[in-house]
Length: 234
Image (cartoon, rainbow, N blue to C red; front, side, top):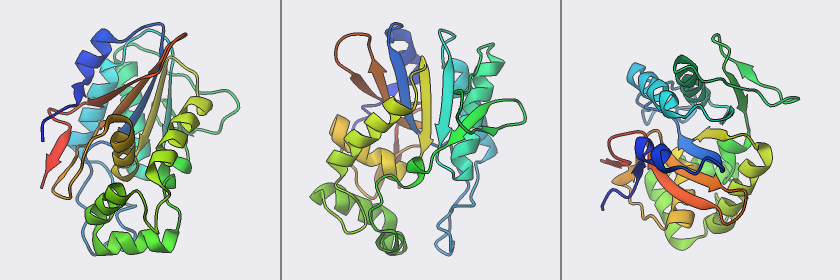
């Protein structure tokens, strides 16, 4: 499988500055999740390298316009969004909260809004989803993507479109960053970019999709990564 992801440095070099940019990203590198984890890794945080990588990504986001940050309520996603915001601040760029919305405030003043939807947007049946996690996460997700149907999940083509619309409705800043989990980005990459995934060939950390919303015309979708490659091979 070839690497079809675009590096963020290349993406930002060609972006249309009259467009709003929406980034849907997997969190940065986390610590290992063991099969014995009873909460399926909900407590697992970022590695030090993951935090540095997220800060580096933040430094790449250009200074044109404001930026807002949303994340799954899970700690490693919030931490990733905070680190991205910290990187943009270190580069001298401002960060802005959305008026009237509750936010989690990091010590350095970066505003991150946790969204429940980013934690479970595609889940239709929680017990069935937890059973899928116990039986084999990657195998279960790939089975869902191959068939389009699964007891645990909503049909992913329709739900991916709804995910995009949810992002557009939540924010209208110049840069809108949404940090979530691979389980909800993989179906979006499958739907919008026709990517194929296998249990031993998966998406990397700090990887996902960029939506460019112009003042006029069609939305442009680009698969992007902050890593050397957008793929993980097990």
